[in-house]
Length: 171
Image 1 (cartoon, rainbow, N blue to C red):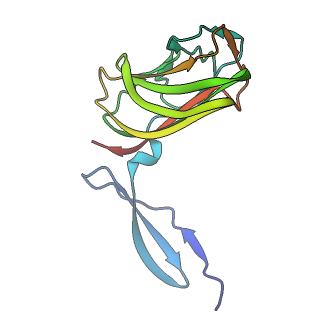
Image 2: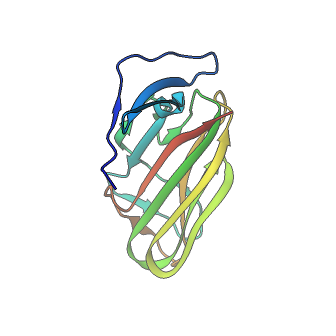
Image 3: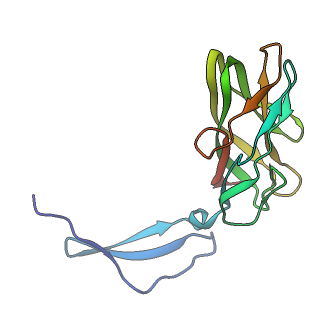
């Protein structure tokens, strides 16, 4: 089979539905492909870059001080508040400095939305979910929980304690 050669032509039109129709040339034949405007939707990734103590037996909001990226400036004060209504994919992780029972939790509007993995005698808890946000008042935050009997330090690095999200479908 010959290699399929795909190249985008410079002209494009924008229909009323918000998609962009881009003509493509594939193996000598021209096809039109709809490219969604969601490709430019809100996306962010933030992580904990300084130490934070997590009390035992209490859900605590995690401080995500550093952004890897924030395409629409919707992430501030460890909170994501999008301005586009739709369905968002969220991924998160929480690392602790020592082995203990731990749980990471995605909160929506100040209440538990989704539990991450519950770890017993491990140092990490991770989670993922798709959540609808209305684009005006809804917001999400990352919380952590540990039950060792004493305070524990949350790992302050981009690979262990983080929250990321992106619009995957508008409302």
